[in-house]
Figure (cartoon, rainbow, N blue to C red):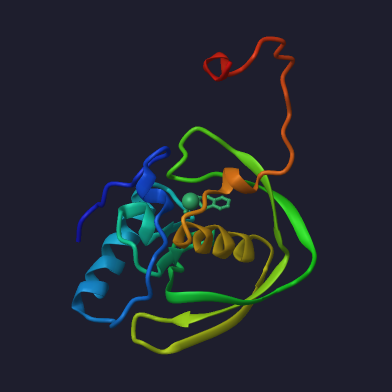
Length: 165
Ligand code: GNR
Ligand code: NI
């Protein structure tokens, strides 16, 4: 097992689109173990392979209080999403020091494969659904700040980015 370095914004590799995992072999098993170790070490709630510079469709999540319920999803796909979106605060290990409110589908159905190669097909809602959407976004090169809809301006009167003038 090994801790893997997590790419941080503005690293362009965070915007690569991941390809499907071709076979759940020893390499993928080792990657899963390393991703779980890296996620827990970083106190993250999820981690996508993109964040550790592996551009394959693989995510790990643990939304449990005790941090003892790992969910591994190989080739995850969101196959249905409810029309209603709820706003909630997000952070990202690849965008340290920032939090933002993001609208996400309240309920989703997702599919994928577990580390034994068994199919997964589940419905999730609320925070669980939010984290699956956040991780699946990483796999298509998207970071949550691109989905923030509500910005608050703290009374700046000067131009924020004068180099753009
Ligand atoms: O640790 C994380 N917390 C979090 C909070 C709200 C919504 C999504 C997340 S995922 C994030 C870890 C991470 O960056 N995963 O890609
Ligand atoms: Ni993230």
